[in-house]
Image 1 (cartoon, helix red, strand yellow):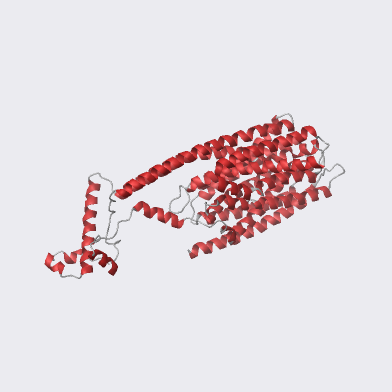
Image 2 (cartoon, rainbow, N blue to C red):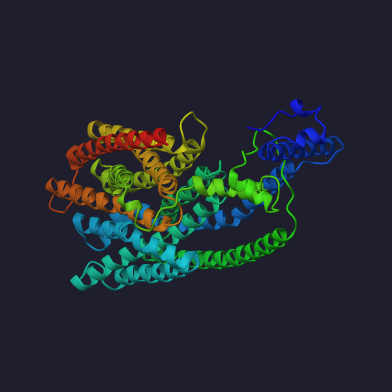
Length: 549
């Protein structure tokens, strides 16, 4: 404990020299600190800023400049999302595709499943490509794959029509899988780049206040892609022209994104080099002693006394304030080994919850056109509902991003887990509505809105939770495995719904009536309820972890 100088004010040098050595040294340091504090106060009174206020002002300038630097990445990522979510529009043209190629309902669902699997099952691979090669290579590969996949779909329709051979059918499945895979690769390049850029704005290990909103905007553009699919399908003359249109739109956007990411990478390298050079110059100059006080002065140990006796500095070592802040941030941030996140219980609870909500959502998204047909609705009604689905999907993503960033008494991670549970409950209520009133247009419209908002919002929440629970270093890998959930659950739901549909279909593979999707609604609702229970377990697990810490 530091001595009180008032007890020694009246002592002359002879009297103080008779004090113990450690007390003399501590007294000298305390006196020096008070003298320096007085000097700094005088400087502030005369208009000079303190070192702390200078550092704080410098940090604010760095934060503002970093925030502005993110804007190009955010814009390009949004453009990538707009052309990468075309799989959500499959339900818009599935009915026409079935008629043109003379397919059964199971065959049509297989094409939708191939697209979903290419996107979701391919995510571990696309995530690995992004983690290892970066966004530039990811966008270039995505441009090539999507172009040739759409070209193959169009070529099949022009050359086979309603006479689809087994070989042509297999290549068509591969082409739809390629569309999903390439789209997913482009999207994860934009999403991963935005996530890492926003996490760089972290302070003391806490994400930026714009983290959820930024992720929500990128995810919203991905959901809005289905609306663009619906609009283009409605205004183009036939399916062949429709697929040609998207073959010529998606690759240029990915190529432009690759160019921008390349330029951004060079700019970041130059900035990093300048900062390192400045840091080296700073360390060569004498460091300015920070403000000391008796409250933060450490007690000198015997080893300190030996060092001081040997002629070393007589006061506590000076520590740079910026280094302290950086060390605190690194200590608070989450950094896991490559495969460590997959061994954590929280990862698989999040995986299971996300699978439940996304599988139920994909049931509606991929079958919306035939759902409208089963209730006797027209093709224009299906088109309108596809647009409503897209807008609701976008709204849910932005809404969950904003709600995830909102200030509450709970931590951001717990708050987002609670929102994920609310999403599962919303899906369950929507399926209950479909079970009892799915044959009415108004009920189906409400169901579509509820499902799309919940489904879209779940993607934003999962991205934020994955980065906060498991860190950003292996984001692509973690996100890729989590995205397997929708692929598995979506495949199960769509195959099962197709079987139940065909049990009640007529000789031309068309089903009319309430029973076409009633069983599917019931099962999907029960699964969503199970997802809410799993999310509750995840919440309790994370709450105990935070309380223990």
